[in-house]
Amino acid sequence: QVQLVESGGGLVQAGGSLRLSCVSSRSMYTIPVMSWFRQAAGNQRELIATQIVGGDTEYVESVKGRFTISRDDPKNTLSLQMNSLKSEDTAVYFCYGRAGNTEMWGQGTQVTVSS
Image (cartoon, rainbow, N blue to C red; front, side):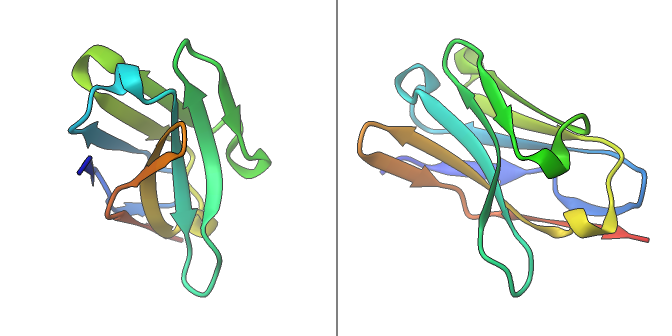
């Protein structure tokens, strides 16, 4: 059973920054697609950033220019640097990995942005 464990969430003021990390128990060289999702209260889970092995990245429009996804495959770590945080970024953030038909999810970490 592959484990993805997130950390780094917390409470921050609007305009501030947080860095989320996700450590994989499986070698990330074998997980081509790594992403961050988030789910705000009462909303559906939303894909916000993806990085494939080799470096290509994609972002949802609402976080472009503010969030940066990065993967450190030798350290089996996925990160999300979040800058210029807004109250609407408040959500539970989930780490996700996909290898073929196998999907992996972390347990989530809460990010709360106070205005």
